[in-house]
Each structure stands twice: as structure tokens, then as C-alpha cells.
Amino acid sequence: MKKIIETKQAPAPIGPYSQAVRVGNMVFLSGQIALNPENGTLVMNTLEAETRQVMQNIKAVLAAENLDFSNVVKSSIFLKNMDDFAEVNSIYGEFFPENPPARECVQVARLPKDVNVEISIIAVV
Image (tube, rainbow, N blue to C red; front, side):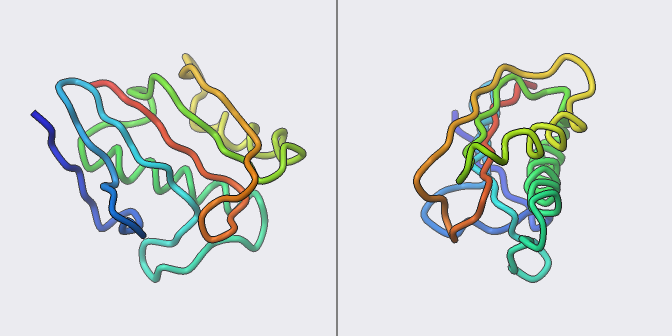
């Protein structure tokens, strides 16, 4: 059975999708961009601030299901420019100090709202 996960601590979806869906012991989080959940504005003053907001949004959705980054088994990072990899990777790594999940990181032609980074994850309970 499918359970929809929602929290006001993370941005509301900007399309016909859920913040996350739980099926059994697996939780699939939709891609997060750097939208501030309090006011709906994009946090894009620096790549560091943008990446941190993305990770905070993921953290909030995980917390809605009583999970944290230790539950993450897979992540997908989408970058507007692969030249940003080192900086995004450094910040991302702070959230996975040990036993990081499997991952891919790809450059894409364009992301929603013309952001620089979007990250989606899969977690287990």
C-alpha cells in the first residue's frame, strides 16, 4: 500500500507529485530544489546556500517519516553545470559523514525554475 508523505517544513510540490511516497519499508523522495518552505522563494545567492537549502528540504521530508540521512540508500544529484560538482559534493558529504548511500551525479540541460542543483533520494525504514 502506498502512503503519501507531506510536511509544511519542506516546499510544497510545484506540480502533480508528492513530496515523498512510502511503499513498505522504502521511502521515495521527489527531487528537492532550493525553495525556502517558509516563503516559497528560491535560495540562490550562492551555490553553497542553494545546496544547503536542498539538503535541509530533504532533511525535513525525511523527518516527516521519522527518518534521517542514515536511512538514505540511494541519491541522485542533477547539476546544471558539472563544474559545480566539487562544491556541491563537499556540502552534500557533510550530511553523510559515514556510510554514504549509493549515488549518481549527472549534468542536465535545465532544471525546474532554472536552479543549479536538484537532489532526489530513496530511503529505507
